[in-house]
Each structure stands twice: as C-alpha cells, then as structure tokens.
Image (cartoon, rainbow, N blue to C red):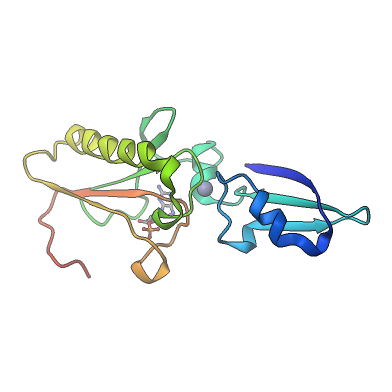
Length: 162
Ligand code: 5GP
Ligand code: ZN
C-alpha cells in the first residue's frame, strides 16, 4: 500500500504536514514516512507499507497457509509454530501494533478476537483451551510490525509466559 498526499505547506512546517496526514496511517514510525520537499514549497508525504511481510501475504505476494479470510482480516498458519496449532489473525489494514490502534479500530479489534475464537474452535481447541497473544513492541517479542493475534493450542501452556 502506498499513499501519497500533496500538502501545500512551507517545507519548514513538516510537523504541520504530519498533523494533516489522515489518521488511518501510523505516524509514529518516521521510517515509514517519506517527505520529499519540492522547490515550489510542496511537501510530498509518502506512507508506505509496501515492504511489510504481512501486507505482502495479504496481497498473496508471499504464500501462506490460509485458514480464513474476510473483508477485515486473514488467518494464516504460523511458519514457525510454537504449538501443534499456531495461527495468526491479521487485520487487512496495516496497523503496526496494538499500541498504534485507535478508537476507530475498536470494532476491528473486537472482530479479530471473535475470529480468533472461531478459528480456535474450528481447530478443535474449544475443550482443551487455547491462548491468544498479542506481542506489542520488540521488547515483548513482536518481530513483525503489523498487528496480529497469535492463537496457540494443542498442548498444555504454562503460565507465566517466558
Ligand atoms: P511476533 O513475533 O511479531 O509476535 O509474531 C510474528 C510471527 O510471524 C512469528 O510467530 C513468526 O513465526 C511468524 N512469521 C514470520 N514470518 C512468517 C512468514 O513468512 N509466514 C508465516 N506464515 N508466518 C511468519
Ligand atoms: Zn502490513
């Protein structure tokens, strides 16, 4: 996904440009925002999630074992499963992490959890139990910076997690 916005502002006012960027795009990671300052005082703001692994899986550019797909999310099998069942519930929209989700995402977050329960039931985990995990930030183990819910089950799961 690449979005371009043309903002007619003096290039010195890049913070204004950031403020005007539609809120559906994460503004916290500057490396995903590219500012090109044109000589006519135009600031071109490019927001890119083109390199995101999960965005590429959602666009079928990278193969994955697809368990479920609807208009808001996909569920795939984790490539490096940590339990006999290890699924990832991923919103179609690129949201970097739970910390980046905002009020407008409340219904989507609820949908992700409902789908997590549905696919866990579909995998036969209802009786044995299962765990849903959202790692938020590198310090908590997040390695792919596109929000996702892990669904783990099929073995006993200890607590607290490591
Ligand atoms: P995180 O560490 O961000 O909470 O979870 C990312 C998950 O994505 C990891 O469990 C990792 O095994 C999984 N993963 C990484 N690359 C791929 C991939 O190319 N395909 C699939 N299906 N899962 C992946
Ligand atoms: Zn993404």
